[in-house]
Length: 381
Image: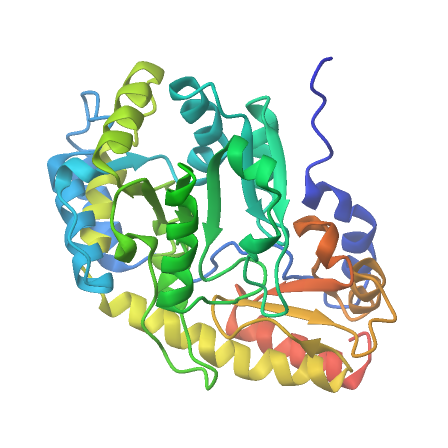
C-alpha cells in the first residue's frame, strides 16, 4: 500500500489563523516555536567571515573545529566527556529525527518498531512511518514522563530505538538524572538504542523559573545512546540549520558514513558559525532570561482567562487546558483566536493530549505585551 502522508499539523490551522488575522491590529502567532530574537553578533561575524572562502565541499561529519566545539560544550554544560569521534554534524535536527529510524533499520533490519512519548514532537512518529516501521507511542504519567512499565513486552522486543525528549516539547517537563538513567537502563537491557532529543536543554528552569542544570542521556554512558542537539533554539540559528549528534562511537561512525553517501553536508559557513556559537555562553544566558521574562507576563494573563498550565517549568512553551477539561484544544484555540492569538491544539502532539494547547513564547516583547492586554481585557483590539 502506498504511503500517503497526513496533513502537516500546522497546515490545519488555516481557519484559526484567519479568525486571528481579522482582529484589529492583526494576529500574534504563538503556534510555532520559531525564534524571533536576533542571532548573536558573534555568530553573524563568523558566518560572514567564513562565507568568503566557502568554495569547496564541507566535511559531512563536521569539521574538526565543529566537533571539538560540540564536545567542549557537552563537557562544559553536562559534565560528560565525549571525543570528536563521538560527534557528527547534521543539517538542523529535524532531518536527523525524521531519517534516523530508516538509517538505523538498515543497520539492524531485525527490529521494526520505534518507541516515543505519547505526547511529543510529531516527527518522532513520522520518522518511523517514513521508514516503513511501526510507530508505538509510550504512555506518559501525570508529570508527562514516559512510563516504560506500560510498554508491551512484544513491542519492547521489536524496538529498534526509543526516543526521549528532555526538556519536553510540548510539555516543558524535565526528568531527574535518576529518571533519565532509568530510561537508558531499560533500553540497554532490551538492546534498544536510545535517541535523546535534548535541543531545549539550555532552557531548563526550576519551579521558580530559575535556570537549572539540564540532564542528558549521556550521563548514563555513551553505549547505545545518541544525544541530539540543535543550535536553532539555543542560538537563534533556526534559519541556518545547525545541529549535531553525540554518543555511541560505533553508531556515530555509522551515521557519518551513511550521511557521506547521502551528501548531507552542513554548509561550511554554518559550521564556522556553529563553532562560534558553541564557544559563547553569554548570549544563551541572555536568551534564557528573555524567555523567563516572557513567561512571567504571558502565563498569568492566560491563567486570568481561566486556563491552567499543567506542564513543566522548562523550555519556552506553555502547556494549557481548561481546569475541568470541558473543551478540547481546538475549542480553546478558537477562543484565543478571537483575541488575535494563534496557538497549537494539543492533538498535534498525540491522541493523549487533545484537551491541551501549546503556546510558544517565541514572541517579541511588544507581542508579549499585546497578548497580555488582549487576553486579559477580552477585547479585540
